[in-house]
Every structure is written in C-alpha cells, then in structure tokens.
Amino acid sequence: MNRTLKALSALLTYPTEDLRDAAGDIGLVLTQDKHLPQQVWHQLSGLTTELATADLYDLQERYILLFDRTRSLSLHLFEHVHGESRDRGQAMIDLKSQYEQAGLDMTASELPDFLPLFLEYLATRPLKEACETLGQPAHIFAALAERLRKRKSAYEAVFRALIALSAAKPKEDEVSALLQLPDPDASDLAALDAAWEDEPVRFGPGAADGCKDGLIARVRGALRPAPDMPQRPRS
Image 1 (tube, helix red, strand yellow):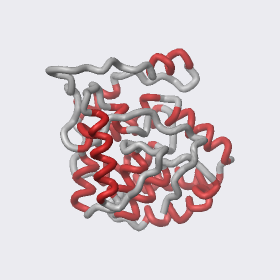
Image 2: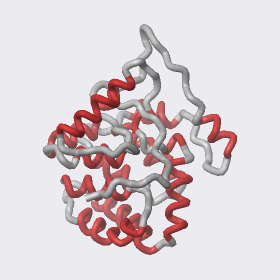
Image 3: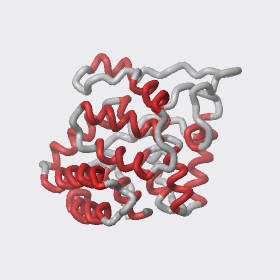
Image 4: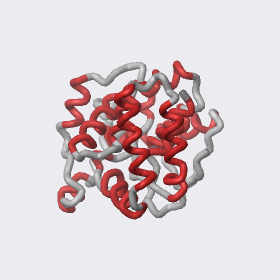
C-alpha cells in the first residue's frame, strides 16, 4: 500500500507540469490497489484525468482557493484540532524527529503536519501501522471530504480513499463537530479573514481539551507554505 499512499500524497500537492505528466502513472498505481473500493477508484480516476487534461493555471488557481485560502480545507491536520497548548512547538519537533528516524527528510519550508508529507511518512511504515495511524485523523478526512463534495471538487476522492484505507472509521459525532465549524466560500474575503484569526493560546487545566491522543495530539498546525515557495521533489 506504500505506493498508493505516495500516489495520494502526490495528488494533494500543488499542481505543476511534473504532476500533470505523472497523472496517468499515478492513476495506474491506484487501480492496482485492491484495498480501494471500486467507487473510490472511479472518483480518483476523475481527479487524475482532470489533472492530466485541464489548463495548468486553472488547476493552480483552484488549488489555492481550496487549500490555501480556505482554513476549513487546510491540508495541515492540526488546523482542524481545537485547543492550543504550550506543548505544540515540542510536538512539531517530535513529529519531525519521527519522520527523520524513518529516513524522511524535510526542507525548511515544510511543516510536519502537512498532509502530503504525513502520507509520505506513512508510506515508509508497515501496512498495519500505516492503516492504524490513518485512523487517528479519519474524522478530519471525513469532514474534508464532505466539504469538498459540497463544492463538487474532484479532490473529495483523495479523502474518501484515505477513509477506506484507515483501520478505524470516523466517528459520526466527531465529524459532525468539525462540520459545524465555519466553512466560508473562498470568494468571501471577510469571512476568510475571520476564519484565519489566531485563537488565543490557553494554559493550565483543560488547555488541551479537544486534542486527540497519538498523532493528532502531537501535530498542531501552522499555515501551509505559500504556493510559490519551492516544493521538495517527490519520489
């Protein structure tokens, strides 16, 4: 399944000519994974076709509107976990160290909770471990999939695939709680600004309420690097 996770990671990166050229090969990798339901594969096929055939500038603009401007669609996992704690910085350092121990090096522009990077890391792990770890943020994947479905975005397919591969399926109450949070349209600049306002850091008892154990408790997000920053080559 490691090739599948690397393929899904690539689909969530900023569209480039290289990604367009590789879209067909990525689609072929996904067709060979028997863990993916046929319906999910058909959805993924629609995305890879779109990436291979649509105008590159249109693809890039769409990506920015979805994942860079809209906080509720952030590809940083910790943007979707509420509550700030003074342990956040150390948690990011710990996760980065975990990646490095697995032989996955990060560039200065990357943050550990960026989902494509997280999937690259899981691609290095044994199948059982990868599936179990995917289950921890499964409720986040489900909320993102639903928000993308409402926008009629082909990117919904990636998150449906991640849910299908997860050992633990998303809990309805956790998904519902995420879906109740603001989800402004990318054209509503005032609402977007309000959504990106920093939340106050809380200390003391209850400061970590809302955080998840394991991965989610250790990865609290900052903003994704700007789309014009150099991207680390993906293997």
